[in-house]
Length: 186
Image (cartoon, rainbow, N blue to C red; front, side, top):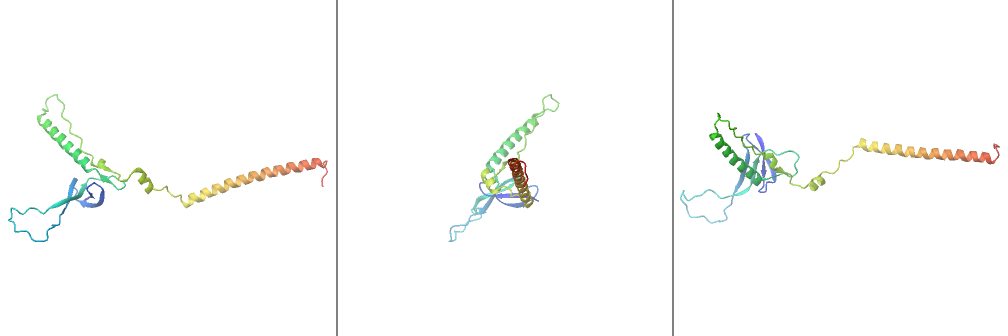
């Protein structure tokens, strides 16, 4: 079993579901339409009885979705166009292979590259919306304590510098006082 994605009509992710490993591609999801008439219809023979009416409600996308997408959207139309182009190119390749003579000097035709379905998934949000969902990480408690310790050390260094300069000024003032008193000590 593998995961497939249920999408709405625009390809927007709704929910995952499990499918067998062999299932791949895009499949329509249809629901029965409730009859609007309340009174019974006249009896129809078996040939006239048609299948119940259904409406398209979304898709089942059995193509891997890359990690890291925000509100993913699958480009249904783009994928179907790419698949149609691949199928046409593959038919041409098979026709060319049927005509190719292995004993001739002509090179063997190259098969077309298969469609990379994962490339049709995209973010459903803009970069700005994603950035708003992911605020900058808050620093850990040890980071905060480390920053506070660094700030305290810087503050202590500045205070020590002030103390040293005041001490030098005090010593200078004492020397001037001593010179003024004529070298007499008190």
